[in-house]
Image 1 (cartoon, rainbow, N blue to C red):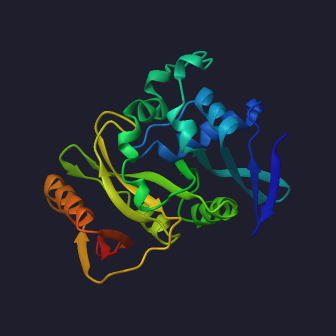
Image 2: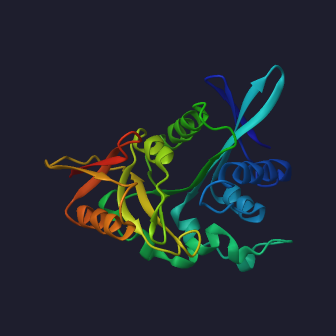
Image 3: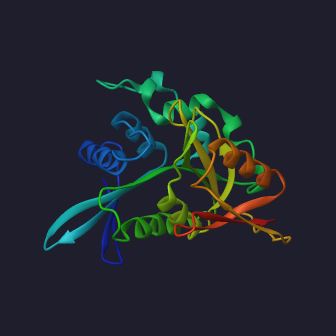
Length: 259
């Protein structure tokens, strides 16, 4: 049975893994949210696995008495990401080799090698947030709702946000702003494959540990210029102890502070 919660005028439904209708709705939300972006859509059999091992929340708005789905967000404990085996999943008509979770789990623990800096406890992997209705603040409400649920366990949360397609900078600026406003920091660069074979992603972390600033600040434009040079500069800043703490869509600049 799904669990439903009303919060700030929106309905949130935590999906039960046996609720096939809600699994399909989550897949539809992913398709609607990602169809114009870089990120590939997750597949229903994999969403079922995430619902079994972690949490999937569907968000709905109300139009009179009608409930209209507006977005979806998925959370999975890191150990369940590492133990994911697509060969044990009933794939049906889907080619699970193309699943973003399959590709990420195959990349191994090396992708997450820097997380000890931020947590010595539980780590949750934030597999995605997809909104079928954009520009209305629903994404902020959904992320805020799920993070409040996570905060009860005080886990570190990690996610990936698109940075570049081969030699072209294609930053997901909306997601940069959304996540940094909720306490995430840009903490590294991850080369393909993450969710596919061509996109480079930034790794964002919402730390469990309190981190003290040690001074130093750098503003870096993440949307203009050479992708190779920009990504290398980000790597250099991270290696020197800087983290990206806030982003401006107007100037396209990430504010890096040394910790």
